[in-house]
Amino acid sequence: MPGFLKSRPSRVLTLVLAVQAILFYTLSRGEAVPLAPPLSGFPSQVGGWTLATEGLIEKEIRDVLRADDILNRVYTDADGRQSASLFVAYFKTQRTGQAPHSPKNCLPGSGWVPSESETAVIPVSGRAEPIKVNRYVVSRGSNRSVVMYWYQSRDQVIASEYAAKIRLVLDSIRYNRSDTALVRVVVPVAGDNEAAATATATRFVQTVFEPLSRQLPR
Image 1 (cartoon, rainbow, N blue to C red):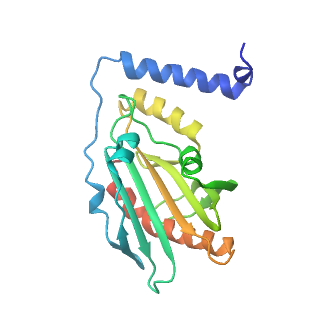
Image 2 (cartoon, rainbow, N blue to C red; image 1 turned 60 degrees about the horizontal axis):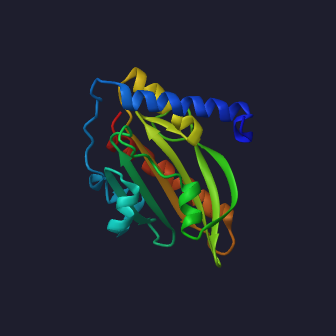
């Protein structure tokens, strides 16, 4: 048996992927694809944050992402001194090979080197329990940023790529749906103050989470 299959998590993940393939490519019934309002309708002003830049995604990148809808914006706070970028890639189905690209792979591919990796627990409005997201510190040259990201499906927030695959299989079985969104927030680190950047990212996530949840299918 190959070495990577000797561990229990690897075997479980292999089984999950096999079941996923069977579900996606052999089920004869049509998938229940929810209607999703365009992400461009997300507010340009939310809380104390105001849209500063509407980022453009080049066609070559769109062709690689294969997302059905993308939001790529930079917001600034009321003082205009702090900024946060919001990137959302929405996939209405994953049965045709479309799937979110993990920032764990995309960021290094863009030249960003991770130096810290952990999960963060963030209380948000409208939910009894806090959400758990991934938190990264990445650097490229002298620039550093705090990155927070998660996967969101049917109002479920998932940090782990492994857990997201399991959720995909369960939703395909129970609800006949495979839609999902990758949500990523990036805040630059100013003056080596990671704590301040993390606090800004946390505050931004808390501000945008509820209106973004209304924008995505439940």
